[in-house]
Image (cartoon, rainbow, N blue to C red; front, top):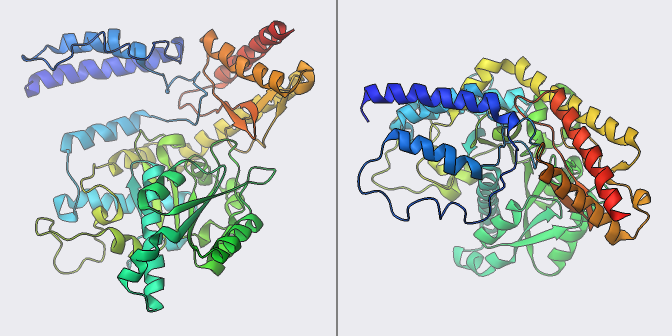
Length: 493
């Protein structure tokens, strides 16, 4: 493909993308294919000779699209959103054009420095404490800063490594040698609630520490008292607490942990405090949500996914640390083929030492495009629109009389179930009704939702958060829920 054909095909692909977005709401959000469907449709070896663009385009439409869950449909209410936007796509196009491998400042100074700047922009937009900024108000370098990770799971693992390094340094200050520390690594304990994202336990497996899962309270929150009790027991058993993850907006219910109380414990027990706000962190762009986040300013690290609820195409997970020393000490590796900047390096972030991979894409571009083309006011309006729609959805369900809301509706998530009194059966019958309701809704094909379990209770958890969604789409969701509920209850009776 030469540049002239690229111009032709590129324009065709833009048209294809635009047509997709114009029509995606008319497609069933959920794919109906069976596992293994694609294997029988494509060759089992790569082609020996080049194929035409037309053949590839035809295969996208006939073989790939049937197996796509349409996350960008305005009728997709599953999990949490995975937002896209046209400005982000344009930024990604520029990134693909340049295709830099930004493992060092010198590889492309603009890639590193734009990320530093944009992460400070984003941190200020969501009201983060100045400790997390790379550049202080007086223009000098700060101790902290932000970096774009691939996912919140990567961010979790990275900060757990940094937390372990901080714990190592503390033990060394007590006179322990590296060999002594190696002998007790297995006694390190990281703390999570039973509502923390699975990334916490995965991180514990990867770095080789123990994971203590603490039961959440009646509101599905990790509390100060529960954390303190777990630490007391573990210290009594000869274990070494070193890390705790608090969540601002859990996956199941969007609950907010006792951030201030957990910060108290982290400070008194010398734990690294990480706050995972993968979904709800975007809401902090709106000042009215910031009182819910008191305690974040005391954390060692904070992360949220701009690719969930802030219009930035996957992948774009924002991570900030208040002090990068332990992170860099843990992950920095010197090789003769990895160049370093000579002389003054005040504003040079060697981001390879802030993450697991060496190479990295120019992801800051798409975030830069989004923040400039929407502006802070546009982002805030976008968040508020979804919260308003979620509140309306809650009202419609309550007024119907057959449903109960299972968790406070604070952001875009609404957790509900068919009331037990409507079924007049046992717990098994009530759970069957709600799981059958999910099946009925998704088989209907007009909208897509998912369910979860809250201490053995089956519930539905639609999330309002589509980039192009409107009140008509939420109204359609309500209509389908009500129709399917009537059908499922009739089946039960």
